Length: 129
Image 1 (cartoon, helix red, strand yellow):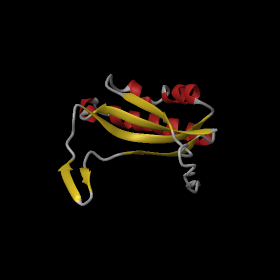
Image 2 (cartoon, rainbow, N blue to C red):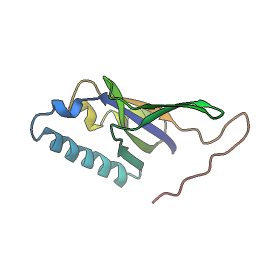
Image 3 (cartoon, helix red, strand yellow):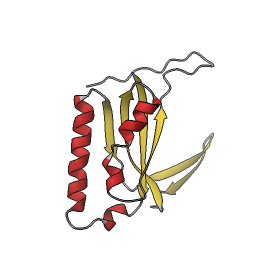
Image 4 (cartoon, helix red, strand yellow):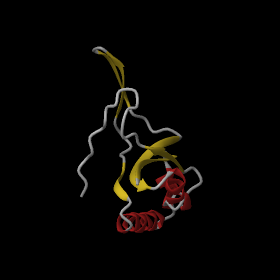
């Protein structure tokens, strides 16, 4: 199996648009989705990200730090999964509950590199639970 990253994007204020109780329902469906991926041996990790932080840029000691600001669309979480190929990873991503609770959700499905081809550098494996 190959490793893939799902980068979940959504409207910055999506939670505020939920009706009372709808956010709890969404979280429960996420728990089922995660539980299914675990049982299938496909989930490496998954987490939402907080809507705060910093954006850094620059190099050679000339750094610029900016506060993170909530935008119309932003990265809200990730899933690190195992799948046989890109098509299977996309099929898994399409089952994500994000798509049931708003029209702004998108998931970027990306294969992870295990080696840099030009140098032969192999990325060390992370321990798995």
